[in-house]
Length: 394
Image (cartoon, rainbow, N blue to C red):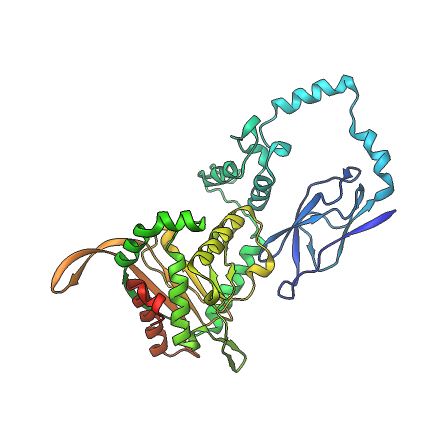
């Protein structure tokens, strides 16, 4: 029986996707639920599994093809399972050389963990080029990440001279990010307001309770959870900052879905903490840790990257001192965190050193006036400098 392999139903926010790389060739046997090919949307990479066991008899859409929901991309003959099995077994005389060839090959390919294969495929890296450090030379996701972190090898000079160039097409994610950022700058009246926050009270609180917090809740106590809590408190006081623009309408959201920017091998992604106002600090930290882990593994779902009423981006992770973050439409504001550095400040007429972080909040001036933008950022600053405010809701 011939069955069709279809593109899954994509969310309304995703109109099309790109096939990355077929993992099977025509004539090869496939197992039920075995991943046939990765599908890259502008948000995440999805796996398309085989709906039934059988033999792949036709590839309808080749690598790099643009497809939509429920498009036919391949065909499987389920009745050919039995006849395909013998073809997989090699004669004894051939088995030994084949085994030797496998042993001589670089660690990778079938000897790579699924997460490592995913990250390598997303980055366009041949997993066979990655040295494995796992048991038996198995390639781990950390091996691929370390491989990607190495400086790129020099591009071979072209025949035309000593000024080589390399043209690489944007990934669908990168192209979509570029499109949305350009759209944001063209359609929004973006302004940015700045402030500085003394991190010492929060650092002291964290140092005092981090060990017990981790023991009781099974997750590390970071700073982002406090900033999410502080942002929610500020948004409650100034609802316009949590609003969005829809044509000539202002949409006030009665919920707080906070996007938290995290890095991934494919680039920056922004998963959403839904109903952040209803979560405890421990629940927020667990959610952020889970997002970070699954972003590295390429396992975030489309629904987790869609929506959001406000975004927090932490450029300080990479050492940024100051930046002007770009709004993620249709949101109306975004908070930028930066690196914490010891700086000279004046307290009670005395110059003292304090760990200071610069904060930047970009906002859409079409609906947010300077007053609300400044006061909401001051509210975040006040909550971080006096964390008890978050407990007392003041």
